Image (cartoon, rainbow, N blue to C red):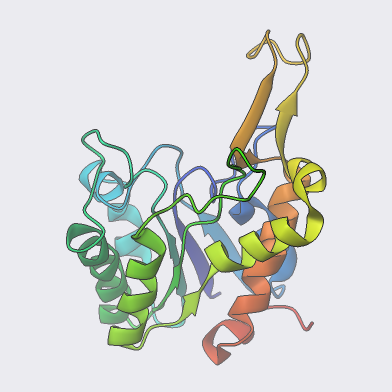
Length: 220
C-alpha cells in the first residue's frame, strides 16, 4: 500500500478540535489503496522537526512509490531557537528532507507556507511570510522538484472571499465557548474544520498537476 507522509507544523497537522490543519482532510481525497500518515506537529520548524527526532520514523519508513509532502515556514520565521535563515539554512533543511525521500525511491513535494489572515490598517491583506515562500519556489526550480504554492493559492482564496468570509475559515471562539480560551479567541493562523477542508482542496488541486501525485488521488 503506497503511503502519503506529511511533515510540517500546526497548519498541516491533524490537531484537536476546534483546530485543524489541512493534512487532516487529505484522507478524503486519496484512493482506497492509499494510506495517509500525518506526522506534522504544532510549533515545529524545518530545523526543530529534525532536531527533535520527529523525522527519523518517517525517514525509516519511506519506500518506493510513497509521497513525502513538506510544508514548513511559520516557525522558521520565529526569532527563537527554531529560526532558520530563508536564504541558507531553511532551503537546506527542506532539501535534506527531499533528498531523504529520493534516496529511498519516494517522491517529495514542496509546499509554500499557507497564508495567515492578517490585514494592515487600510484593510489590505498582508504578506506575512517574508522571503520564505520564494525560498521554497527557488529550491523547487533549481532542483526540479514538485511545488504546490499554497501561499499564493490561499491568498487568492482570501481575496476572493473577502475579509469577513475569510474569517470563517479560522478558529474564532466567543468568550466562554471553550474552556481553554475563557476570554474568547480570534486566530489569524489556525484553521477550523471548514478552513482545513478548503485549504486541502487547494493543495489537492495543485497536486493533480503532477503525475506522481495524481496516481494516488481519487478521480476529480
